[in-house]
Image (cartoon, helix red, strand yellow):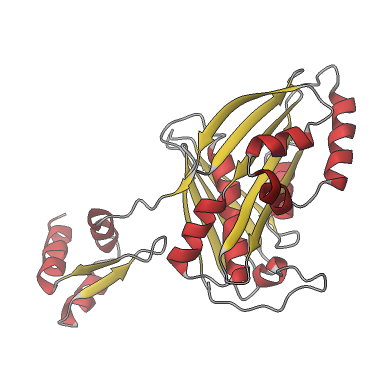
Length: 297
């Protein structure tokens, strides 16, 4: 089962979220039949969303990460609720990209460097906070690091990784988010230097997960010379929330003219969910009933 662990340094100067998400990324790859570079991009976004979902204090809150670059992948979208149940998609999951010079998947090239990353943090209060910053590299982790620094003014280091096998199935996936807490602790600067040195020499996230398969191990490696306590564990998974009633509600919002056009086609309308590709069928009579309700107000 995929897990997220959360830890604090003993002086409360730094906190870290670490995640192993291999299972949910496999589920996403299977659901979207995505090719390797799309799997890596979506997997990174889903992993980040799961960890950011763990930051939400309200039970009915959510996090939405939208990445829109000028590359062939199109939009990458990941959503997490406050329980770190995630869902997402990318516009073009069948993109094929040549590898980078180092042999790794070219996520940055697939996403594109010209564009933005948009984060909607909904605390459940009815007033979502939206932050929008330009893409730095399209590699997603660097772009989220920039988002936290620019939009939330929180010094943050983000690491994300997805290892895709030769058969297209993810073999390891996960990541971390390290943040400096408000107010300086007694060892704040020393801890900052230690963490920076560790991150410079840290093995790839997927290599760590392949060896240890534990978010605790990621934390212990990054905070290896710093006294810390793991304060929470939680599960994370891929979970679509669609059902026929939700799709019917979406149909009622497309407008009378578009709905009438579907009715005039004189055949069943098939609506697919972008998050899980499940298809819902509405008969001509069902569409007519929806239109009647709209007109009644």
